[in-house]
Image 1 (cartoon, one colour):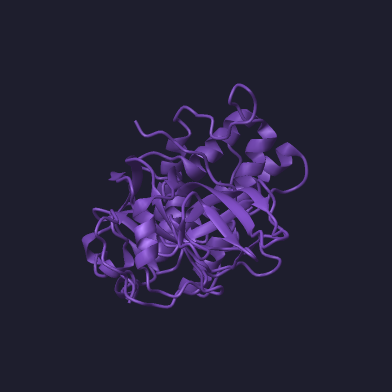
Image 2: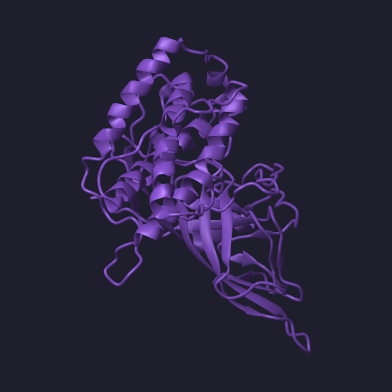
Length: 380
């Protein structure tokens, strides 16, 4: 049983008057964000500034799952009405900055929209669907909770309504220290093939467990890990084996911060002691990757006559350096299932009980499924 399931059964639909007041208050909180000095959230040119078109595409990808077409002003007006039900004041650049701050930056007292949306998914025991557009994620949640979708209402209000129906407390973020060498268990969301992989190809992975530190939710199950193909060598004559070198970059947390990840001794021990079933390919890959007849091979190196990583295969990584992150302080009435967490460190961690892991739900054909990773935000 997931830690949220007992709580979910107690929720009830609130009166219409309550939701009207809640929607009004959410707008007040929303516009308070626009008073915050805008920070560049997407580097593009030599000065670290993003162009209006890049900021537009970034915001549309977060909300819709992919950029739209058409004139810049027309698209901006449409996005604002989708989010807030009205056009925002200011220049194009100011409006873009306000939207991106609302979506993925926020403040400690008013976390960003992606933070709040991830909490809703976590509260009902679902993995965060970070590859989908926010609009599609909200529609899925409304259909699951209410059986109907709130078409015509601003997306910001729809998320606040979902949150209010599940959790009466006000949502805020809390800082925590994520220790170095925290082991992460993840699965590949797409296959990687020796025959088709190319240097620079993006590889997407997702956490298989919630990551918490001192009852602060840092990254829910389903949070994305970004990686890429460094180099590829095809199998050759005289028994030369194929090879894929993979660079692992960052875990995207609930607070839209990129936490550096790598391979190391802690993740290698976790992989060596793991007894679960990996997935479609039945391959367990660790920080020290399990490959070839010589046992552990370090450095993200996969060798074999046919180098194939299947969707659902398990990988063990670890965080690099102590990192200050923002997360969600889990209320005491939800702390009922410690099995949904991962250990803060992997030192002397006991072997995990055997269990079957299934690949995370994937978008169906025709659904928007690509979302750009937000940049790292420094926490002073």
